[in-house]
Image (tube, rainbow, N blue to C red; front, side):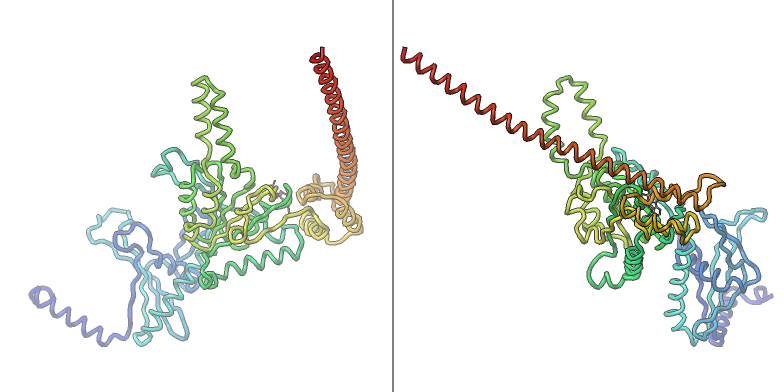
Length: 492
Ligand SMILES: Nc1ncnc2c1ncn2[C@@H]1O[C@H](COP(=O)(O)OP(=O)(O)OP(=O)(O)O)[C@@H](O)[C@H]1O
Ligand SMILES: [Mg+2]
């Protein structure tokens, strides 16, 4: 009726003034957050954060909920259904959140598609609280939402794809991942309790030190070197660290990285809140022997005359990695390593003495952790985890034997694990004592054998020295005699 009686221009004017009048008396402020901003294909980060915030803080008060199964994640996130309203309170201020959507008018009547619907959240609050809501409350919502997202996300275990001669194609990504579900935690990890506490403190301090790192002018990362014999729990420790800090893991396979440039690209493509792991760093690449290798190569090339064989050899060599020690040093502590934040870099090795000192200096590898053979304290943790036994009369014997022999936690754990339904704690502890005694006996025999070999070697050396002296003497004798003969010849 309104449109019929008034001409278009006039009705526009009236509507404009009416709106003005309403805003003049309307005491509320409204802010909308759209799911997609502009032409973006990516969901707005603010929208996602608000969704998470509302789903945990207010969704239980809403009457109609919507379930979203988060992508490649098995958990269900409940959020407010469309056109639902919830109330939130912040420092005594009331804030209303409404979820809503706009539907394009031209949409075909029979169309079921909802991808052109535009969802948004609308915040309503009193105008007098404008400052506190826009400056403090919104920041609080976004931070909370982000923190909830981090807590509920599925953590991932990444590994690098092999880089090909042309680099990674546009479609292929540098890292592939699976969901990270390792059950190892610091509770299940058997090691000296003091050392464990020290590591836990170190990790907690690191994760809270964002501002401190900024203040001292360091990028927010920390290097750990885990070293020790095989089976002492280095890999388990990495998993425990990731579970404790709720970080992702990037397991870097150095031999599949073509060169230093690719190594740098991989680094840039890692996210924050992650652990970058290089396992068995001493075996991954012959980082120190590169120069020597090249010299040898020249000599070998001279020897290989057959052109086909030579070409095949060259091709084989080219396939290998060209990552150098300096490339790796820069990866850990160079300018590029400052991109991203909150990252741990962990190296593991069985032979720490083989590593280049530059690689493990403080600043690159800040904390060196030795994972050693099983001690009595570690055994107690394993006994509790594997057998639910906290004390037993056999513990004293085991403690003594562990001091006398070296056995890795992996071996101890294997002995403690029941192999059938009939095996109870006592049988398993007996098994452990038996294998500890065997190991002790074996070690003793080996020591005797080693001593024997050493003695033989020393005796051999002595003999050869004596022989050498004898040879020299006889050579001198021969020389003398020959000299005399020559003199006689000359005289004749
Ligand atoms: N300290 C430990 N606490 C608990 N379990 C352990 C410990 N050390 C080893 N284990 C057990 O032994 C197995 C092997 O351990 P892990 O793979 O962590 O050893 P590692 O030090 O990484 O060995 P490697 O040097 O050969 O890689 C694990 O599955 C774990 O169950
Ligand atoms: Mg390992």
